[in-house]
Image (tube, rainbow, N blue to C red; front, side):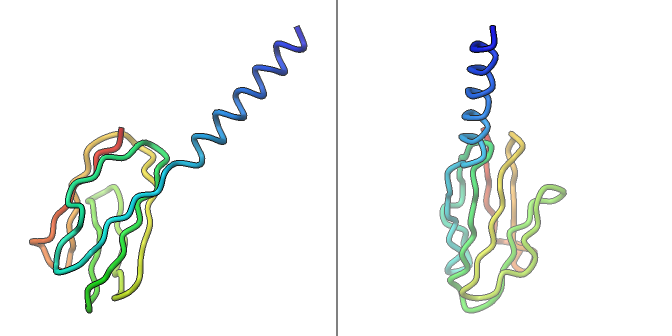
Length: 103
């Protein structure tokens, strides 16, 4: 019985470690656009926005995440922990829009 309990603990720890090390995805901000404009990720994945424009932008999904100002040649990251579809935009440039789907 102790061996079974120990095996369950080991498997649980391994699954927790795997979930904690999700994949990493990059969204490039360039020419007043998010690229890719739509991205599907899994819970626990990290999304990194990299600003290659000459001026600041934001990645803002109301009540979900807000990067604040991402300066030129800077980046910001977010770990997707909740499943759903999240439309986001740049608060400085309202025509810039993107969508993250978290599975």
